[in-house]
Length: 169
Image 1 (tube, rainbow, N blue to C red):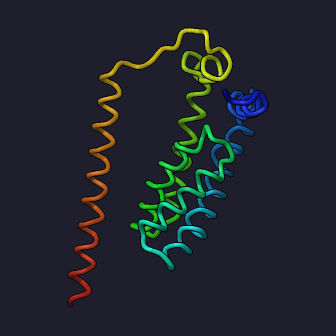
Image 2 (image 1 turned 90 degrees about the vertical axis):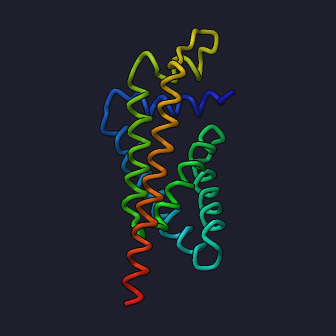
């Protein structure tokens, strides 16, 4: 189980009555600071000395560890993999910052919706009933995820082919 002080910290940040500290502490500051460190410094440095795959995995591991708690590691690691790949493909830190902000906005919104607020059923009250979405919703999410990844890969390949043809001229 999550220690009480960590769940209290999450509650203070997520369910704060004043929205401005939550927006600053969850969305804006972490997105810029963590992405600058993990993409502009770690990933960029790793990519100069190692293969892209090693650089992406290494920087994503550091991104997961940077969150300083095991409950966020897996999600941060997976988003770090995606963000690192996007950064290397696009050469833009702004897209990685946007991905990070989008993820954190979703977390903040979910924490503010009473019926699915994780702090009311996951962290403290494990004996209460949990409501999950229907399986079709999960399948739809997987289909959308795979479709989006396919479109991204296709787009980056098309850009790479155009660049390659231009360099031949």
